[in-house]
Amino acid sequence: MNMTDYRLIPKTFVHCSNGGCTRAADCLRQMAFRSVNDRNRMAIYVLNPLLACGDECGEYLPAKPQPYKRGMSRLYDNMTVMTARRVRRTLHMHFGNAQYYRIVNGLRPISPDEQLYIGRVLREHGVGDSDIYDAEELRLTT
Image (tube, rainbow, N blue to C red; front, side):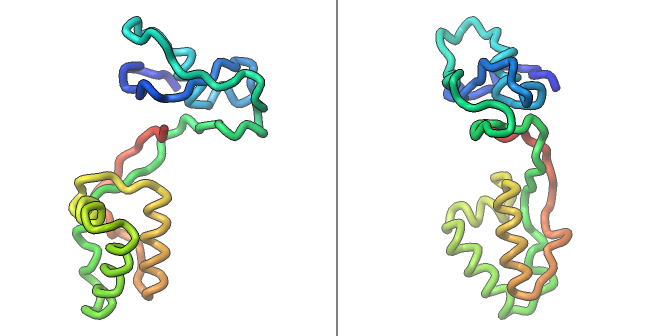
């Protein structure tokens, strides 16, 4: 994988300088380090090189895109009113008022972990979790 635009990397992102690591080829931190070319940055954050590497590395970030979803406009279509109320209340309590509405209306992406939580809530209420999202986008997680 190639880092196409280093300017998209947040200034506080932690890089890895250990090119000899067995997981360096597919670690986002190592790829970012190899891509440092922005002369506007005087400094970057780098992991301690004495940390464990390879399979024991706790800072490894896979450089494969993760599926993020957007919007849930069809979420309540196939539910009874009582089930919809319970699901809405559970999601509302978990995410909070503002985030709940931003998620449902597609104003913010839904992470893979949040998708798992939403799926678990739906299954607990006897509702299938297929085809509830409006769109999918692939993102590198940082």
